[in-house]
Image (cartoon, rainbow, N blue to C red; front, side, top):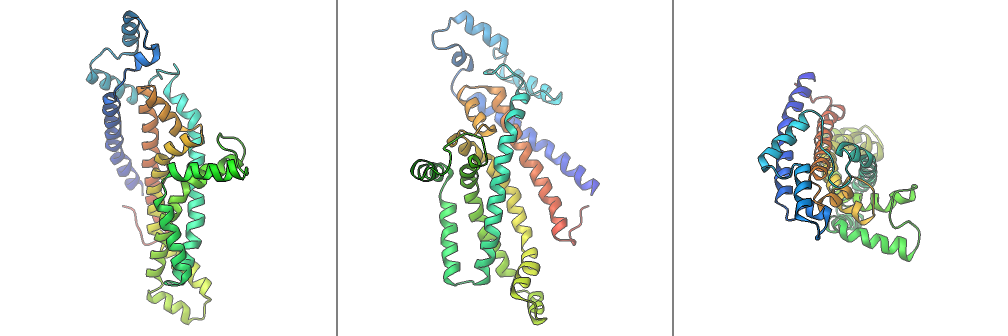
Length: 306
């Protein structure tokens, strides 16, 4: 186990370095001058040049990249152009909101998908199966920027049941979490259904039924557990998708998380903040994938780590 963890951690280093390099390259290719945005169109040329020197933007791109990597190795993410504060502090103040939203969305998607997938697999080809399959197809097809505003119009504007935006009490979590978790639940439902149908054809299921076990016990205790490994894989991969999707969802619902902060940083060409936000998302994604691999051993004792 220890050697496996060490090997995975070492493999994650070039992944994160690649993310840092790509983000640094792309953000410097985006049109727009952050100094001009900060000072405005009517700024004096001397003021623009002075601020550019102060921020280190007058140096060649390779020099800026080398300085950024050096700061990363020393645990520094730089200082935000827009807020004038350390990027790490800004991200830490917004990160809990994004993590809460992604976790709730994941829980909503899993809690809805597993029972629905089991129900569809228990009666394959029936009207219930066809209805649920059609519903999941609709959930996969609707992007966040469509389902989010539609949910706001229906549940906030027309019915007045839920708040439109912001992060306050439990009611504020409902629309963003459901919007973000809907497509995930649709994907997971199809995965659970396919895995359950395959497992129900195995000999051990027939043996369990021949022993007189109830159908509920056969479905939940035997078939479901063995079909969860691909589901856990999808959950781990989709958590990173949730973080990426949170950029859109947080913008729609004015959610004060890292996703909305990323959009604001891009609009203001705040290079250090954009790089820090995307690095935080990438680091979370890599960590969740590692935890997913470790979860395999809990679901299937036959899996050994070397």
